[in-house]
Image (cartoon, rainbow, N blue to C red):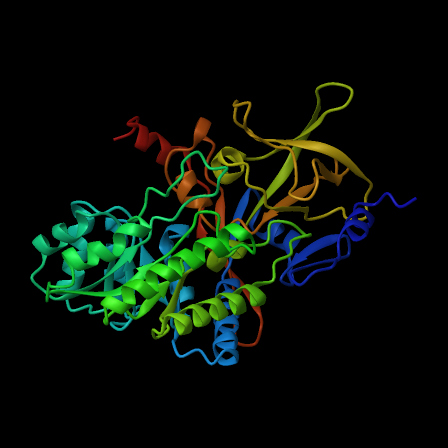
Length: 465
């Protein structure tokens, strides 16, 4: 009978995988010895493997370019990164190495854009697609960017008032897009997205507010659904409805030349994850091509806004199992040296699951456990994996500490968790390390932030002047 943890994984999954393998009882992630990283920096630890950002951008570009060539598609493909997934400078700098564009969602995003332009990281030709509900400072900042001469700043109109607000702020000519208020899946609590303008109202809105205004040029139709790009009837039905709007709008608006199909590519959340990215891209291009040909209009240039897909698989978190509590005759609680609520808030708030693997002791016997965080909140726990209703880890030994890693956590966790700010129960934010690779393939690491100190938290709370 095979009772080692390594046997469990190899019997359950196709393992090793592209980014994971083991050597001498330890886990390697993209050929990085995770235990060596722990020995150098300690735990708890957050890390970002920067090369994965560029790798995923290149993959998406290749899928779209291949499909465009196959279907003799006459439009171009443009990759955009939505900054809300992770605003950190090291993320933007890595992503922008790959000739991409930016999607923003708030006023301060525009300040980031200005900073990147000032440092020469973002070109004047790059598209800045301004999404989200816009008021006051966001409107002002967009107008300032347009007035500075950034011709490819494209505010995406979310509601009927935004265009008039922009017109009050700038006398410059500018381009706009319109966001479609897509219908949500039947299981949602609401029927139509709160973002955008309804399908049936877009053409009339254009004719009423834009068509006869020489200051404004409609360039883009924006389509996005909350559940992302999936091979199911719901997605294809919503895409077809979007394409019908595009063709109807194109017939009355000759300046319209772009379709933003949003983001929503999934990322790997389990060792059993399967998703045919290449097929999905191919079929999306095919459907757009066929619909436009049937309607007798030119195909649009394609934009995507990939956030989680860009940065999610670059991030990870490492914890030590401090202690095991046996609360009854069945439940074993492995207590980590941090908090899930503060460091992986998506796991707590929306029950999101990540790839979780031990970093060491792969040749040890395994046991079923629950994982508990340090806060005194009963919801600070992690109790199941994406592929199975339970967690299995190498057996706990007090004298031989177990370390575990959560992988593909790079999107949203830091900003939702409040990086550098107050944390639940004042559990400090972990140390954060950046991992790079030089032109020869050698791995280098750099400390980005030390673990929070009590002085920083107390100052926020007003205890120190």
